[in-house]
Length: 142
Image 1 (cartoon, rainbow, N blue to C red):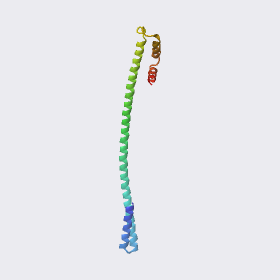
Image 2 (image 1 turned 180 degrees about the vertical axis):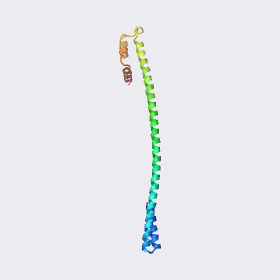
Image 3 (image 1 turned 90 degrees about the horizontal axis):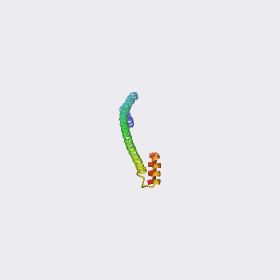
Image 4 (image 1 turned 60 degrees about the vertical axis):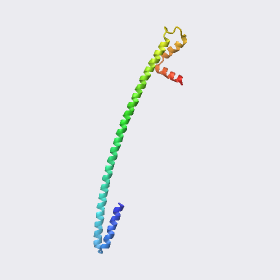
């Protein structure tokens, strides 16, 4: 805009030096101003078009980034679910093993040589919720 304004002023000054007739100067000055306005309008239109193109490109990039983020989110959710399921299966197997060990240790046929009190403690553990038993075992390790 500043360049266009400077160009307009140069043209007016050059016109004033060339013509000495005041009426002709005024007429040429109006023509210069009108052409200046047309140039400014064209420049603004061009800048607006460029801005719109740039904005469209940015919106496309943003959409692509959002899609990539959504895909990564799905992948992370699937990985977390797979890890959760694997841990749950491992927990189930661990609980079953604990119950088997408890039953094996507390069966009367095998407990002839063992004192009665430890078996009673194991029976109490076996009767509890398996998850509570695991939690208690983990706490005892700490």
